[in-house]
Every structure is written in C-alpha cells, then in structure tokens.
Image (cartoon, rainbow, N blue to C red):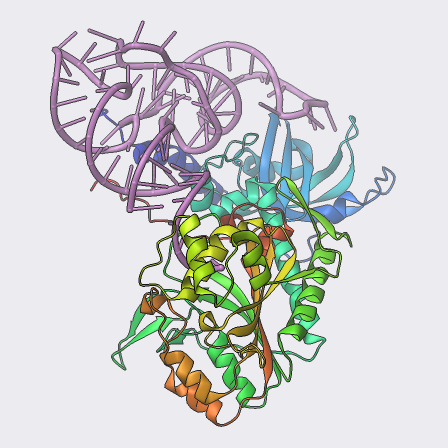
Length: 496
RNA sequence: GAAUGCGUAGCUCAGCUGGUAGAGCAACGGACUUUUAAUCCGUAGGUCCUGGGUUCGAUUCCCAGCGCAUUCACCA
C-alpha cells in the first residue's frame, strides 16, 4: 500500500516522468507514433516570420520544432514553437485539426517536438501565427524541461545538460555558431593561400612538440603504452620533409594539467607550416588571418570589446622583442647573469639549481605577460627554451620565435623551424636544469631527427589556440563557454 | 594542489539567534474558442548533497567527504 515515508529524489523525478509516460501510451492508443519520422520540406521559423500575412490567400507553411510555451484555453491552444532559427506562435483550434488531432493536442507537453502544417497570418492581436491544420508529433519529451522563463542558471546543471542549455540559453548557440564561422574563416584563409589541410595521428609513442604533461593510454594488441598528442608539430614537419610545402591541421590536443577558466584538458589547436618561410612571414600571416576572423565576426569592425576592455586589431600590430620587454619591466638582460639574479632577488624568486634561461622565463611570465594588452608580437626568445627553433644567425643565444599576446592571453606561437638535424639532436638532449623532464620540450625523438636528416626545407611554423581565439572574438571569459562539452568530474552515483 | 563561497520541489529561488520547510513556474483535476509569462478555483509534489558529531530536537551549529564556482599556483 501507499506508505507515507521518505521518498527519494529519483522517485519524485519519476513521478513527473510517469505522467508523461502515461501520455505516451495514450498517444500510442490513438494509433499515433509518438516518435515521429521523416518530415520533408519544412521551413525554418525565421523564414516563415518573413512571409507577408495575407488573409485572402494565406501562405501555406510547414514548421518543426520544440514546444517552449503553451497556453491552453478551452477549445483553442496557443503554443510557442522554437527551432534553431527562432520562435513563432502556433494556434490550434479544435474545429480545425480534427478529432484525433485534438486528442493529441491535449496530450502535448512543454518540450515535445512537433510538426505543424498550417497557414501563416496574424491573430486579432497582431501576433505572427501559424494556424494549424494538421499536427504531427515528432518526439515526446518524457522528462520535464527547465523553467520556461527563468531558464537555467545553475552552471553545473547547464554543463551537465548542455543539450538543454543550447535550447534554453540563447547565447550558447550564438557563441558556438560564431566559433564555427571563425574556424571556417581560418580554413578559407589558408586554403586560398595554397595550404593543404591534413590529419596527423592523435596517438603518439612519444608526446613531443610542446612542454606539457601527456595523457597515457595503452594499445592492447601491440601491448605498448601510447600518449595522446600534446602538439601537432612533429608530424606536420615530417610532411615538410615529404614535400608538402604548405600544410595545416586543426585538431584536438590533450594536456594532462589543471583546469581553469583558460584551460580545458582537451583543446583545439591550429598548426601550420610553410616551407621557405620564417617567423617574420608567420607574423604577417597571423595578422592577416586573425583580422579576417575579427572582420567576419564583427561586421568588418576591428575594435572589439573583451570584458571591460576594447581591443584594437587595426594593423600593423605592435612588435616588441622579448629582451627589450624583459629589461624594461625587470631590469634583467638575457645572458647577463648578474642582472638576472638581481631581478629575481628583487621579486623574491628562488633561483638555486635553475638554468638562467629558466629564471628569465619565470621573470617574463611573472612580470611582463600581464602587461601585454596587445595585440603585440613578442619576438626573439632565449634559445634554450625553444629546442625546435632555429637560432638567430648573428645572435645564437636567441631563437627566431614569436608569441602573440592579447589581453594577457597567449594566442599564437610561431617559429622559424629548425631544420638542422645535428643541432636538433643536441637540443633534444639538452635538458635544462630546473624543469621536470616531462614538462620540457626537449624530448629525444629519434624518428623525427631521422626525418630531418633526409632534408627538411627551411620553414616558418605557427600554432594558434582556437579556443582562446574564440574566447577573445566572442567576448567570453571562460573556455568552457566556447567548448560544447568541457570536461567535468562524473556525478557521484546515488545510493552508494 | 590551496583558500573562500555555494549545494533546499522537475526548473528558478526564499527560509532570521536551532523547534523536521515555502513561493513562482512546471505537474495533476476543473472552468474557459484569440491568448502573449493567459486568467481563475482546487490538488499533489521534499532523505533540505552524503556520512558522522553536538543537542531533548539539526536544512540551520561542528567535523569529514563529494560536486560546482571564484581567486591563486601550473599549463596554451
């Protein structure tokens, strides 16, 4: 019998679900499949809304979408139906949709997907409306949907139910659409300049090309441990050896490190390599490509908002050397041990057991990066930090590398690529003191060195963090909001 | 990894110095043929994140755990 006792959340949840499951059975009892099927020739709601109402000859329309609002008044129902392009009011009158249709209408809930055949016009109060002649149910929603006005505000709930978030928080889809357009713009920009888009392996036997900790996995049949890639670099350069002179890849990389508003364990990287180019060529290309994206997303405007600030992408962008910035903000000079020690001491940084260039990089990250509102190209990095980069011919302690900073974010990273296998092999072996091995870029990759020995053309290389660029161009403060399914810890199981 | 904050109905949120919980929307029953968050009458819905402790009594106080957020640290 019914015991008035403690009831679990899930049981209560089921009571909502149970009501809808009963409606599902009732729909089936009408001889109607509540899960619908193919529906041809329906029009986007946004298109329907542009039609001209004409009471004499009302346009005939067919739409499909989700019920997001429902006003039931006796023998007339008003629904708001939403598809990916917009919302529109739908009127259903008992007389017009037939006996079975009316029974079905009574069994509809917020969240159901329906198709409507009808005519387009205005109600007495002037609202654009589809007047139903025939109702089709396309999918029954058996769980209750979020509040029809308040929507969803709990961030965790939204992330764990991104599919609902997409429907009930309009900015989610807008932002993702902008990201898609941005990536499309990048592809168009590169394709039109003769770059070939390729796909390189995600499973690596050695996780090289960047300074980051990798995820590990295992291949059973071969019984070998593998890493998920942390960068695209080493395979794309092999393609340069193979004669592909302009290549790029837009793909997911994985880094086994912390999660923050700027970091997701998997993120999307664009890397490109251009034979016979160098890092100066990469600056021009970066500037042009990013500007193309800014214009695409901001109707040609180059001054765009980001948080409290306005970022001005009008070219040419500032170009400042690493060494100058470092000296300006810290007094330290690359290669000058005394000045570096003095600066570190002044800022209270421990330097014992650390390579001088590691200290320099600490100083730069701590004291200079924050000041880089940008867009600014910072160029010529200490060579020991860049084992895959060609050194400057006249200043061999510097590497031909730049990073693009905007709003304190590192957006792009580019190099004149090292194509000398002997120097490359040495650089791989040169572990810097003060950096854990797995966080160093210097990891011996014999197969890669072998490839270089067959001859790689001099080249410029560029890496762009797609998620960060999307954040910047959509004025989004957390990376989660430009990624559809950011990583979350699994929810705790109930009843354990 | 650290500090701080949060976790109450399907959703959005109240809940005072401790006395076992409320609203709006959603749901269910009823009225209503042009509503715009429709309205009106009625009903039901809760292991107050989890587990301990203090107490006559804990959603409330204490401890631990889980999840999320913010800031910091590391990384892009």
